[in-house]
Amino acid sequence: MKLLWQLFFSFFKVGLFTFGGGYAMIPLLQAELVEKRKWISESDLMDYFSIGQCTPGIIAVNVATFCGYKMKAKTGAVIATFGIIVPSMILIILIASVLHNFLDNPYVIHAFAGVRIVVVALIAETLISFWKKGIRDKTGIAVFLVSTGLLIGLGVSPAVIVLLAVAFGLILQKWGRR
Image (cartoon, rainbow, N blue to C red; front, side, top):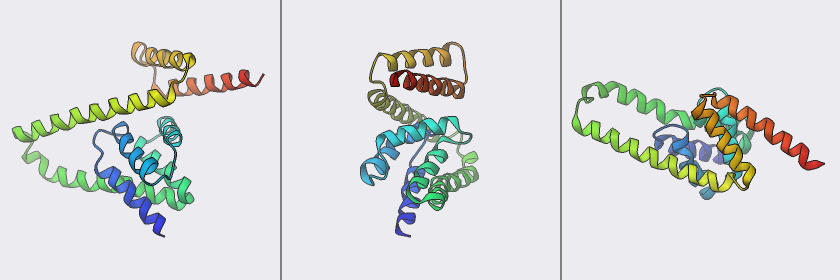
């Protein structure tokens, strides 16, 4: 029971202090789940985010579900998922009830601008961290460049790119066994 409460509150904290979506929460998840709690490895976290990209729904919820499942099977998945969504539900209800009164306030406008800048910095830090851990050779750089070209240059869906990368990885693994 103690682990379930820890799961809930760990994901509650992450959900409470994450602004900007799934990518912005990677540093918080890494600090809480990998470094502090040691529930998962950095490789696990990267895998969960990769799978979370391919599955329907919000990345943060998917990652929480995967982590919770690893810790305490179905019950852990439900508790972790609930923990990650409760702060958003509470904040959205509170903000929606009062925000319309303050949307034109210059302080609110500047506060949101500041939050956007911090989110960009968090995403950049995550990108650099993932680059260091995920791209280890020329093949990784090639996959990155092709993926970026498909995404930005041709507008290919991220889900399609991930599936192509999975297929490419499986092909490489099969060739490596020969």
